[in-house]
Amino acid sequence: MSIQTTLLLFFGMAAVTYFCRRAFLRLPNQQLSERLMSGLSYIPIGIFAGLIFPSVFVREGAFEVNPLYVIASILCMALMVWKKNVFLSFGLSLLFVVVWTTTMG
Image (cartoon, rainbow, N blue to C red; front, side, top):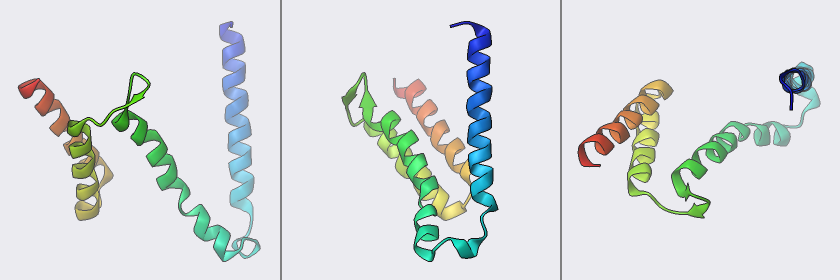
C-alpha cells in the first residue's frame, strides 16, 4: 500500500471518527435516557481494560499470568484510588517494573 493511500485512509478514518463523536456530543442531555447515560459512563473503563488486560495476561498468543505485571497493575490501581493521579500511578508502577526487571532479571 502506498504512503498516499495510507495517509488518505488515516485522515478519512480520523474525520469519520471526529464527526461521529462530535454529533453525539451535540445531542442535548434530555434526549438521552438516564439508563443510557449510566451505561455510557462505563465506556472509558471498558476501553482501558481492553487495552491493558492483553498486555498483562497474554504472551505469544497464549494466556499467561506474569506475577510481576499483576503486582504492578495492583500497585497502579491502588495508587489511583489513593492519590487520584493517573500519571503518578502509571509512572510509579512502570518504575517498579523497570527496577524489578533490571535488578532481578
